[in-house]
Length: 92
Image (cartoon, rainbow, N blue to C red; front, side, top):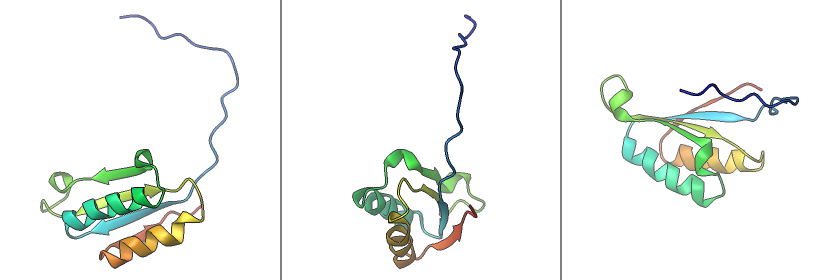
């Protein structure tokens, strides 16, 4: 196994972004939310999913949504609420 190379230079931390956690009691609603969120402009790599097999009881889904733009927050929260999600905002 090779040792990793270290490159010189300053590493800057990215600025904190807003993140919302959405709990869906039904994983099918969570999957639909993923499709709708990507259609309104939230990149797929900003979505984190805890699938039903990792949830206690084996049902439901937790969706972690990272926002590239603050303008998308109300639209995404509205989509998730209409699908029955309970939302929790990360404090910035």
